[in-house]
Image (cartoon, rainbow, N blue to C red; front, side):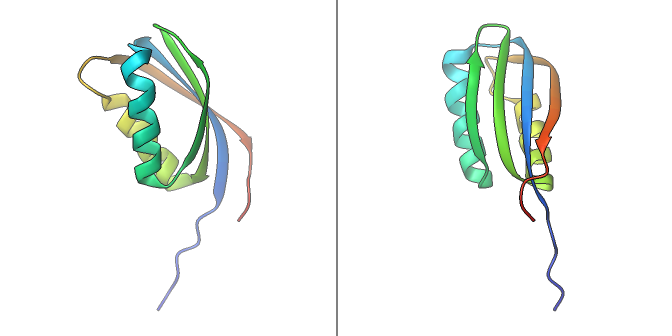
Length: 89
């Protein structure tokens, strides 16, 4: 049986749009937990949320997709990602 190798990354994700941080931040935390990602929100406002997220690259991609769709009361316009470091393999 072949085991798939996934590298762990740490990235800064900036989510912009018409964002209700009061409902979106808890949603982000729950979604990250479901994916097994660690996260820390460094800024949360009505137009921008910044967070650091760490885990396998494929799961961070899934987190981005989930955030772009988000809960019904937010409108995400852009998501920018910057790699902080390569993390551990």
